[in-house]
Image 1 (cartoon, helix red, strand yellow):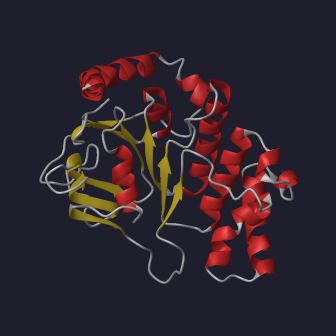
Image 2 (tube, one colour):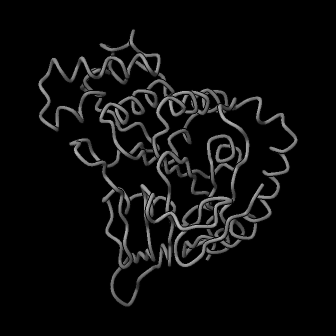
Amino acid sequence: MRDDRQKGGLDFVAGKGRPLTDEATIEATGLRKLFGMPGHETIALEDFSLAVAKGEFVSLLGPSGCGKTTALRILADLETASSGTARIHRRKGTDSPSNSMVFQEHSLFPWLSVIDNVAYGLEMRGVAKQERLDRARPFLEMVGLAKFANHYPGQLSGGMRQRVSLARAYVNDPDVLLMDEPFAALDAQNKLIMQQELLRIWEKDRKTVLFVTHAIDEAIVLSDRIVVMTAAPGRIKRIISVDFPRPRNAAEMRADSRFGNLSLDIWRTLEEEVLTARAQADG
């Protein structure tokens, strides 16, 4: 497994030795984020620079409070950086959004049916009702929930609700999916199922994904590259390429000896940061 360090402020493609600037879908350069009042600020993110190529699946991995979600929210325009630049390149000639975000909690509207939740983004873009429902149905089929189109979120399991969230993100045809620990609240069995489901869906069109997780095994299963972050203030400590071939099987990968070796390597990189974050939390 290769270790790809940052160079010149931007990340490099694994094994290619050249900047991604001309082909990147996501670019962040020198991001810094402060929270709090002047004189009492907390630095959440410091000198965060990363480029993600079109069609690449990259995970941000780090201890709690290291700025992973903050970086994601800055890219999604849900937070403003204190300094630095972040952008997502939009395809030319399309009115699709540059990105869709999938949150840790499903964030569905409980008063809307499943299909209306999936079609909600299209409604906000002014798409007529019949057209948006017609466009939403194939994505419900994609996540295996066509039979539940007229159900409400409260009638679904947690895993099913996250599949609805995934369909809602895809129906808008974004350039980039930003995913903030979308499977964290699920039990181990459903988490494994959802990881495999995401792999299956992602293989069809290879959308660019930036995925936040605390779980080493999840990052390995899903990612082309893993960005390991330091304890707060969050910086990039190491970038690791995951050389397992695709398509992947989430369960079978875990039985491969290389999986265990890579997991241990990542943990050795991460352990000091986790201990530092615990010490910070304890004051």
